[in-house]
Image (cartoon, rainbow, N blue to C red):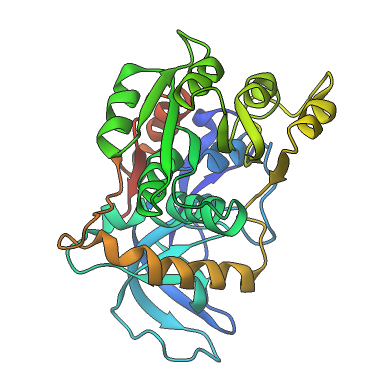
Length: 328
């Protein structure tokens, strides 16, 4: 099968498509003929050698959509050959075939394409996990979100939970999109102090839940706008992991909770519970006839042989929404 590969960590130019041995499903696994996958920040970090992949996940790709093409021993017959599915993966999605534990699959809604479906698993399950499994967000709470690919999902899921999403972004284009998706307010972090604006929005009381994928460089601002008894959830370190100053003292003074979360390294059983909850509570809202309606946001679609260009677009932060890789 064809797969995205790199021999040495580095820039997008190190990527190429090569022929490798086709994936073979193990016990309890399903083989998927992949039609589309999507890029995530973790793919860029893994390509640079900054995010070690789990064992057996040297091929990039944390999500995929396609057709069931085979079964390993011990499958419970939840799926049948030819079923249209989307998958949460530990890696391997940017290839013609991938294997996945059967509990890490979701059905694709009837009115959704493979390209749309490929934009869902990693971003939307990450957002759902942060809001419900980690943050346990409540109706009426204010949630501060970065307007990234995960952010576009988090805005919509926060609205579904009757919370109040507010966002930060570096361009007006991303802020306009966030507003269309349901953000109650948006702040351009390149032009203004988002923490002061968030405090103003919350009438000085602060933000109930902060979803932080930046880390070190935003610590001061996050602490500044966190509410008393608020939750600060760190889910990425794009701004570095080093923190200086009186972080703990200031956090303690607010009785704040500092939580961290990753999805890729979670146990198989945890992911199965997450997919089950998402399938029951959120997935039905992707159907056109459901209100509120959820929709994956797609920036661009690239064929597999243009993987270098796709990585460059995301690395330069030019995308608004998901970058999809279409696989023949």
